[in-house]
Length: 366
Image (cartoon, rainbow, N blue to C red; front, side, top):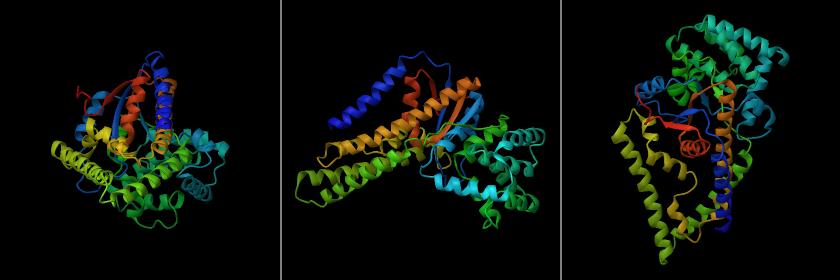
């Protein structure tokens, strides 16, 4: 427990130091979202979009790595997939790295002039991905996927995408479209970027600490749940009884919050449901542990302390990246679309840094 308190002290001290800095001239619209929505029922995003429209963001930031970070970070959870995609695109497209900036500029200009030219968007996506700008490569391919959804008989665009971008195994519209639908970008970010005339999405993610985070998470969970499951089998001790009670409390709390969100916002408004104050806090905490478990003697406070330590570092980086890149581009109001379990901790860090944070539920319509 002393080690946990020490780690938390270090992190909170860092936040206090940030709070002493001058107030940032930046306002953030925070939207916690799901990385994968169920296709049914189809989500109604009209209220969320209306609030984004009223907020009038200068830019959208998402969970993407910058090209600079992608190039220097040698290993993280998705690095093998990134390398595989890069190798495939290099084999399909003979473009030298030194030529990429000029090629991207040319394709961007063409996209501005003729947004409906999907072949140009495919070429632009390829160039972005080759420059290791995955967020904007994904945005361009989302536009292509959306076009193919509406125009399934456009074999010219589909075949061009197969030739220039997709793996050779992709031979159906479903395989081409499926990776770009029913996520936070499909529902929240990209439609508003199109409406607001935004050319690019900006990266804010950090994977600098992914190896340490993954190691700490694995150790904490494996130790804790092995101990917990063993303790719950103890039918005679008071602590065994309490462990079973807490497990029931945790399940019932999650069930209650889900039910309450559905009753309040409806089945087609999951995004609003994820951004309520109780749900936001719970989604943050449940990634580590329910606080009730701390009273058990088997709770590995030191291991969970390190897990929280590395999680804080990632989210602190994400806030820093947003602030620095917004300042570099002169943005005063930005919209953040992020996995809902990031929303609570990022909001706290932003506020400590003097950034005004507006939760999507609290955002005014005018």
